[in-house]
Image 1 (cartoon, rainbow, N blue to C red):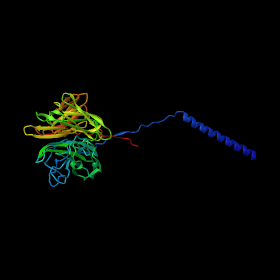
Image 2 (tube, rainbow, N blue to C red):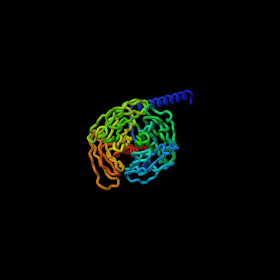
Image 3 (cartoon, one colour):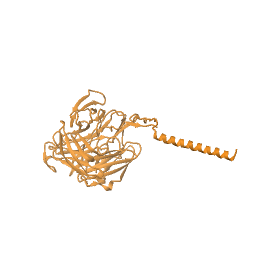
Image 4 (cartoon, rainbow, N blue to C red):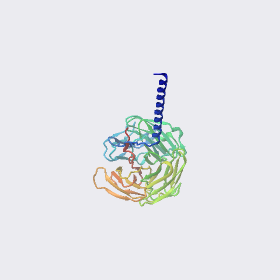
Length: 466
């Protein structure tokens, strides 16, 4: 083959290669501008019932702790007396939490997550230094919770009990807030709570000489339960005791059921002017850096809402409203705020004949979802209060957890808070979201607690498998 032929063949090959390359590039450009058929697969979503084969654990506060019961150890809280526990639902197991000393160990109850279960405790106390009634809900352990109530000023002692029903130790950080803001000295205070035990600390020691107290409890390692006990004396005379149930997180709208201020027929002067012998107290805290305003109103059985005042809230400071006269028939308190808050309310019982007095810190109740079966334990002598804050009626059904007897039904008007007859082991179902609590009132004793419905978000989980 001559050199000329080789050159011609090589040139032809080069031209052919260029043509093929140009065609390929043109095809890619064309494909980029012409829509092609596509197949879209929606992700497979599986809804999993997380209540299967899991248990709910509820831990109670145990007997009331008296600060200074041992004069040689005035800063040590020693449990006294015995608390009784009301349980609604069938517990699959029970236990107690160990303590270093004292009587009345805290009860722990277990049940499958799929079954309604709730518990509450009540204690009548009458010692040389303490007198009154205290009640609280038995709660599920949590890694964060808030409690409003108490003081450490003259005549007051306030304790915080931390329970760990788990199997690993818990390290608990306690943050205390007062009327002026966060108490800096205890922001990093830590308490080690061994598994299966309860530790009680004195808030008087952490934050002495405070008129108002609120506490944030954060645990790592294991979730814990937290309860506050408050005792007051007037000189050497016992003036009352109270338990306080925690609130899980701040919210802009809170409902506190089962309130009361039963001070007999006396009317006398107080900080709010002429009114009840002892004013009804509402406190609120706006955690964080934002100030706000909380408006407070009460509800009665007929759906009447009465505004009783506002609380101006400085950041991280406990604000207070003193209600000189609680409106007749008030069964619940509603607090609406423009910032997330925690709150509590204190009512009194006073017997003018015996001159005996008591008080109770009432706590907010979480919402009970529509059509959910919720256990509502009622302690002996207690009355169930159901609150319907919505603008539609709620049909309430109350049954017994053991299935005995006939169910009862009651229609609760929009915006009403009603007192209902209920057995000790009540199961409550509502056609609309409601809140509930229990109160106990005698001539000179008062106590109460919220019904802690399980979080309606718990129970299901959506999984997207690969």
